[in-house]
Amino acid sequence: TQTGRPSYRIASIPADGIGPEVIEAGVEVLKKLASSLNTFDLTFENFDWSSDYYKKHGRYLPDDALTTLKKFDAILFGAVGAPDVPDHISLWGLRLAICQPLQQYANVRPTKVFRGTQSPLRNCNSGELDWVIIRENSEGEYAGHGGISHAGQPWECATEVSIFTRHSVERIMRFAFQIAADRPRKLLTVVTKSNAQRNGMVLWDKIAAEIAEEFPDVTVDKMLVDAMTTRMVLKPETLDTIVATNLHADILSDLAAALAGSIGIAPTSNLDPTRKNPSMFEPIHGSAFDITGMGIANPVATFWTATEMLLWLGEREAGNLLLDIVETVCENGIVTKDLGGTANTKEVTAAVCAEIEKRL
Ligand code: ATP
Ligand code: MG
Image (cartoon, rainbow, N blue to C red; front, top):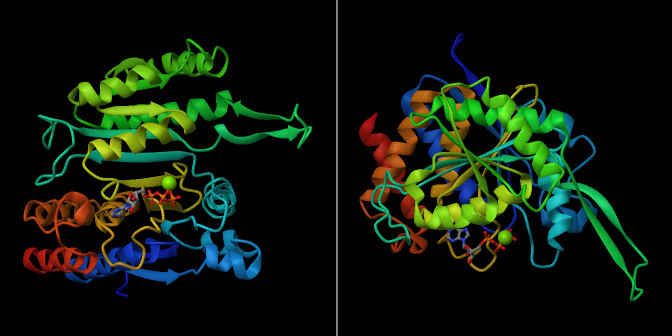
């Protein structure tokens, strides 16, 4: 390490299914990019926290996991979920056990149609679908409040309580307005279900209107979540930045990924905008056990994830260059089966590394 040049420590947690395959590809590309640019240093430390770890130790994370992670500049995460572990155990045991205590309250999910790829929507080309979905990542419908009473009785009853606090709604709203303000169109669509859910969603709308006053340049547009799904399909070009609750944005972002061509493209960032804690970057897709070990997982979502991580770390040139290179490789037709191609994970990775070599 030369003095004065930035150096970033990355914790990588490949975890389950295709997670290790795509993280290996992502780390290879990041190392190639860093050594070719030669303007900053990246070091990686690997952690084997996963469903296999859980089956061996009875828990996903060791006691000192959070203390360990706090020493890093960013976390690169693969995917969690195994066929023989209930999904709510794996999700709460690993992903949410990191996101919640590290206060990664803003989940950012960019989606676009890449040059050279095809949206399932007719007449939707690259440039017409270019969105950022901001998901509230700390409370709402996934706050974990509720319980089960009268278990096993015919009158068994479960409650799943949504929590919306002014504190959390204000901070996610301000964050979303800022993202919208920094994008060329300066358009923010606020998604709710305030016709049917008359407490939390009404507070959400009220706070959106308050924060809007701080951002006079941003055009605000309000949508009910059900109508939003049709608009995403029928008029994708009318949307830009979107803010929604934990549950709504979870669903809308899967739809968004499919509309962009494949779930194998899109990244997601779990950010602590205060920067007190490291943020966590992961592909949007899951562990995909149906294709695990076959070497055909699309690594593009992880490459875009790497871009988002570089941008967050302040390496704008490197981040933007990597995304452009990935789009060029897609345009050249070197894509996996989910995007209609025949290349495997290693071939796409090699093509990206070759393009880095060519440009730098
Ligand atoms: P999880 O429970 O972890 O979310 P899942 O199998 O329910 O896993 P995904 O992993 O998101 O859900 O997979 C949904 C579908 O998309 C699967 O058919 C999978 O093979 C496919 N898929 C997901 N990620 C990729 C990828 N990177 N490349 C190619 N196909 C993928
Ligand atoms: Mg899934």
